[in-house]
Amino acid sequence: MIDVARGSAARILPVVTVLGILTVFWYVMAIPLNAPRLDLDETAGLSTLARAAWSMDRPILPAPHQIAGELWSSVLFHPLTSSRNLLYHAWVTLSAALAGLAIALALGIALAVGIVYLRTLDRSLMPWVIASQTVPVLAIAPMVVVVLGNLGITGLLPKAAIAGYLAFFPITVGMVTGLRAADPLQLDLMRTYSAAPLAVFTKLRWPMSLAFLFPGLRVAVALALVGAIVAELPTGAQAGLGARLLTGSYYGQTIQLWATLVMAALLSIVALLVVGAVERAVLHARGGRL
Amino acid sequence: MRHICGSAPCAAVLALVTGGIARASLVGSPAFALLTTLVTLPLLVLALTRFARRDTLAARLASPALFGALLLWLWEMLVLGLHIPFVLLPPPSAIAAAFATHIGTLVTDFRQTYLHAVVAGYALGCGAGFAVALAMDRSPFLRRGLLPLGNLASVMPIVGVAPIMVMWFGFDWPSKAAVVVVMTFFPMLVNTTAGLAATGAMERDLMHCYAAGYWPTLLKLRLPASMPFVFTALKLNSTLALIGAVVAEFFGTPILGMGFRISTEAARMNMDIVWATITVAALAGSLSFGAIALIERAATFWHPAFRR
Image (cartoon, rainbow over all chains, first blue to last red; front, side):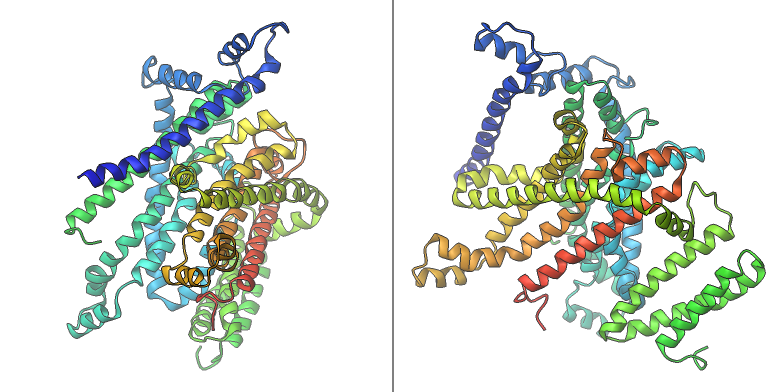
């Protein structure tokens, strides 16, 4: 018990220290960065300067408390359906990312099964799966959205398609490794039972592959969020964290910009926590063996 | 069909010929094109399965090459045959034509985005990540403090800092390089740290027996052992860097650059130029990935993955 407590303290203390140093550094840096934009007379003391630099309307580098304040007031003082509420934008982005993740899971697992069971696909398709990720897909994301929008396809689908394209790769790679991870001894055992290929798949290969699915899924969740945010960058997008970033950048609303970034970071932390919880639940349901 | 053409290369060449005939006759007589397509598809599948059974280097290269040709050919045939609107998806032949016509613009864009922003940002970001990882290695406290943050940051939507960097460093390429630095830093940091921890207790004991200090151990054992991890980050970052530079150009740029070209020409519905630019990006991404993979082979020849 004492060991556990000491262990977590030893883990948390360095992180808190580093975060503290970063925050102090942030506040200090805000003064010289914002100073050129202030109209203070030369004689103003450092404390006046600092107070002015930390409470600017459109600072070059907003102070952390300004970002936290913007986040706080945006979440609490506006209704959930209002476009001034960041949670509303976060939900728009999250729904696109989740739809993309569903596409990625279906496509990724189907491709992995094909690659593992068909030698032809393994040889001819797998190199292209890898090559698909060296193409900067995010770069064409806005174009896909604009073009599909011109054809009358708007809303969730174009964003989900981009999120899905980004997110399928870690799932495919993880599942290909996972489906091949079955122990030869266990495969031999299945042969002695004269198990049908389907039974080998459902009873041995699929359960074995889950241990490889979840690490891939964690990367995929992060990529799906990035895809959804970048897909919202075209000017046509009305809502979502990406659209919020773009308006913030156009109108020089730096505090709004930083608050949106923090919201995006919080969203990916929550998404990772959920994946971790699902992984633990699966582990628990299977008697702690994964 | 097996009797006519037993060997894989023969089937592949035949498929390419019939595929070419199908494409050529598509405009004149669609019925004949459909017929030749029906001959081509089984020939291609036959060639692919035959190639997959062999283990020579040529067969290993031919499989994906033939599959790529199949994809391009299907794309061309479907887009032209089904009369898919040009703005939705231009056929590969139109993209190739645009590539040839606008080669001058494409080269200027490539120079602005890739040779300036990507290369500078990539070198700085990877170098800084590597240096900080080495510094962290000397201080366990720093490592325990920074590593969780680095792990967290490498799964964050970091590309979102693009508008801030454009605001700070102006419209020209330095702001794009700054985005690339931030994007490539954390994967490098996390991977190098993992690589420096990758030596076994036996190997470290051996260095201890030789009375090797920190620096000889680092230079002769731990840095070489960390190279597979470092190269993983380098390969990952080569794609990330291009994405960062292109996305940053959506937030403001002088009137050149690949991201600028994509967003303006897409707005003007010149989809063939957009796709030609994407081809340049895809080629640059794949070639730099391939080059780093080749260097990796030379640098980590001792690794089990490359040993023969």
